[in-house]
Length: 475
Image 1: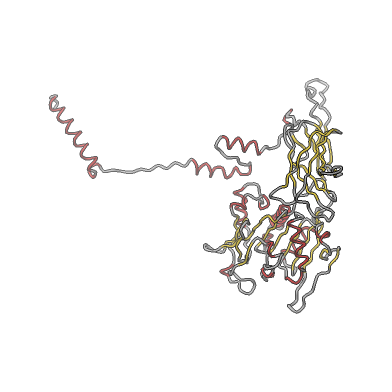
Image 2: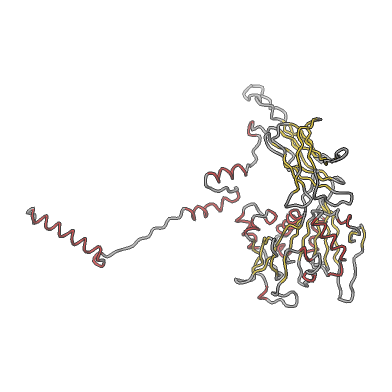
């Protein structure tokens, strides 16, 4: 729900003696601002074969967060003979009884899951949840290697890695197989979800200091996957530890260790909670501003400066709740009661089931955006959902806007051949300047009579001087 607020202050008054002047500019004493309010919590489904420390922490973490509704199924397997099944239904601690119910979730966490707990039909639902619904699926490997046992199933085909022979699980692990650290790759350093602080160098230092897990799965990434972090075992071995890839309309993410809870040692939630909250928000689909039965719609911002363009994101569903991947849809832009633009929506090649469009340059005013579907016969289909945004001048009177324009400062630095740093990165600046402007003085001594090329010219010069002085009568 878009909400409108206005903050205002009373004009400053002069004192009785007239020594303090009245406020001259009062037009900027009130400023509107807009907030997007999410009225419904997002839902997360956690599936694991046993209540491991990692998934138990995850369940507790999201249960305390009012923005999430948690449904956790963590079956305790006493032995191979007792193969219990989950209860199916629409309640808590029940696996969704229908594909439609599963699609109401935003995120699914799949742990060290024995194959018998999930039916083949339900594996297909989870696959469609990511590829068609656009949801996020997070896999957390375990030392019992149940996830490895799913490799040949439809659920296993979603995982962006394949297992290889290497450091064993609970039975075959040795001290030589224990990782020394989890190290970000160059691609991982660019992902905001893996940042504990803004400064890149400081963030890498934190990752270096984090307690290493005692085990990492021996895997290699599949083609089309992106490795964000590696578990470094020794100088000659490392395995992908954090791997991701697009999967149709959604994203899948693989975590090759289940001991991030060790990061809580002496610091509590500082790193462990931030890691999982940021990661789940990144993997799961971004919420839309407007969610309807058949249409989800959002602009990339609520407030724009004049002359800017608005990027629109649309998802259309059919009667069965499945995302529509092809169609002739148009975004209709309203200003007041007038239609000022109709924008063709194109399928996003990187996100299945998502249509995108961009407005022209905007002038100040309040706008609404709706969507309709073109029809070859009959009346075009008009969706009732609409989103809103505002275009207004952000005046700089009395320096009322002191926000940091990172994009502008970065452009200035690049155009000048330099780099842009945040304030908290200032302590790293001295070392960078030293490496750029480092001078080295090299001293050497040459004994003249030990070098033929120095000795001969010097003797020749002295001889010529003696001859000149002799002829002049000085000798």
